[in-house]
Length: 331
Image 1 (cartoon, rainbow, N blue to C red):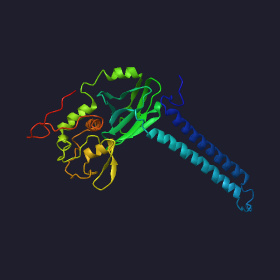
Image 2: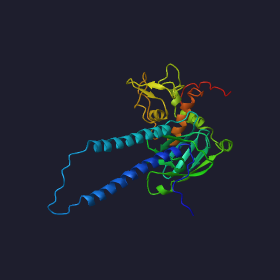
Image 3: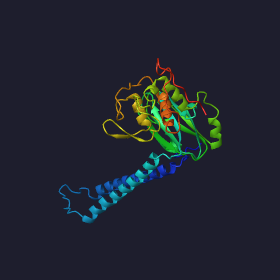
Image 4: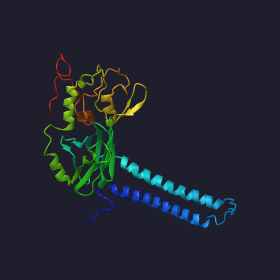
């Protein structure tokens, strides 16, 4: 039986991360050995031979001081530039990435595809296609880790984090929780199944009895009565949500923020934190009324309104006592 020194490289970023890691390891090892050898050599060479011995006076050396300053500075700058380059490559999500919601919960990983499929401790993705993971936590801090992809990101309660990867080889790869989260942390494992694009499309078409994530979000949106205030008409008590995802909105205090997944989540759970300019702080919090799965559905529904989705329309359940408005018919 053989034990590989490193996990195989199965993503487009794996080689870049490994090269940087081995460079840092080599530099650290070189200086650790150099310093250890110099300590031993100098300890032997300049040891006190007689009790009355006095060391020779040292008057400094400009060349030596410049050498031990400039060389480490140059190495540190190489580390900084190289590390920043890899970091930005990891942080910049390609525009054509497939989006999947991941929720960490003791003791499992739940995945929600936009088409509605759900998985527990498993994740199916296509090969050769960038995949963006939108990561949440229902309880404590977890960390979604796929060693073969050199991809890891914390799942933090109360906020959304993201990471992306592009698998290069079909196959099955381990996924772990890399943050100690409690007694059964070691059992919080699963696998990533990398499939050929055609096989992945076939797999996507084989499940999802509840419709897409956005469709589930629309039902929840109406059930919670959100359409009452976000109907989009001029008398609405909340801002129109159509076409705003991905844009910059102006807040009541004059600041501007990007309307992304994190802002949408915060606005649902803590609506008074960043009020949109021109609206009163009337919206109640939905903390405790919507779980992480529901938040993902609502966010996807709001996102769909900027991608040609329907304008939210109050339903009879959302507006008790009001006259139901005609619903738009499907094409």
